[in-house]
Image 1 (cartoon, rainbow, N blue to C red):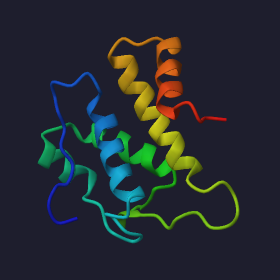
Image 2: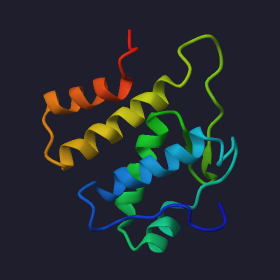
Image 3: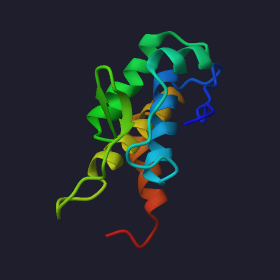
Length: 128
């Protein structure tokens, strides 16, 4: 990752860590960041974005919990291998996307019923 592919809108109601998590997650899931690609250090990305290191660290922790990246002390953070086996593919990525959507919707002031209605509408009339 040579140049910052992540941008943070400080005027957005979505917290900066959630913006970072969503953008990096999308780059990983779409293959724009491949397995083994090294991410900037927490300190470097924080400096590049003008944020506190703790903000970037939280985004990285959540990406690691979603199994999208692996962080090793002294070796930095790298894009993780996609999950292997017949278990539900993309389950952790789907959970991350759902968290990001919910967080953004709540920041807009939407309640649970409105969020669920938006998801039902997005699924369309052919949903099971």
